[in-house]
Image (tube, rainbow, N blue to C red; front, side, top):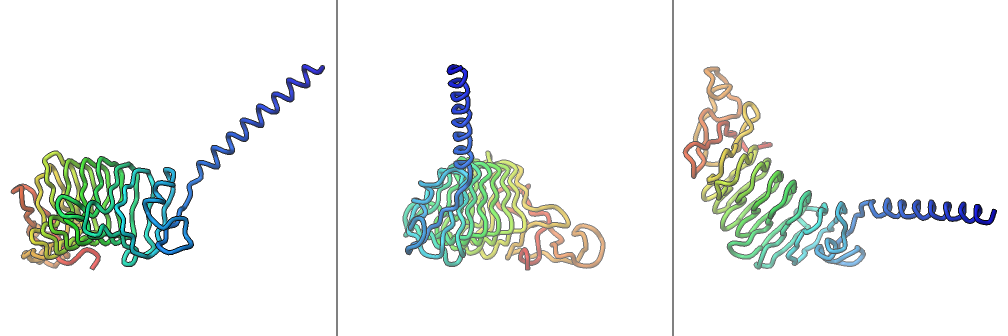
Length: 281
């Protein structure tokens, strides 16, 4: 009888231990939102400190302020700024301001500025898949964003301005979508530097007053989203919009230029459906 009771007690204890361990694992699996403020009252005063403490799947929310940092994103996290005009990551003229080197990272809502001279960037997305960079102001860097060895990433609705080498550099990177960005006053708007960059798609971007709007040494880059969605706006486009359906002999404008826009670097690469006005205007 005592042995039977002892056996029952051990079974209950074992089940209880398993249940406790399971509940602990569930608790650990719940994502956490960490806060960052350059003043007091948040979890951390620096973005890198929050990343170091975070677990994969966590969110880091950064309040308005200026953060003089060089941030390395080495965990799958979401990093969100309170206001892209007032939440500033400043490289103070040296190095890479933000460097992501893991998959499934999302960064948005920041001004990212003052990286170092060539070959540094405001942001490097290096050897990554499925990163999303959206709703940022990226300014005063050598390169605004560099995609290197990265695939399946999305660069959406950023203002990339005043970069001394290029707004966006694409190197050894494929199947990335780049759309709804304003790329302005850079030496080079977009520069696809290598033939090993395949099947990248760029559309609904506004290229405004870059010294050279775009150079494409990649392979099978698409510079438009077909008709009637259209391609990109080019501030130096000299074509007209007199035919509905571009190449069709139907009168009436449709907001798309009647002749393609040539991309420097490859005589066979064109934006077939250049927009007559900035995307979203």
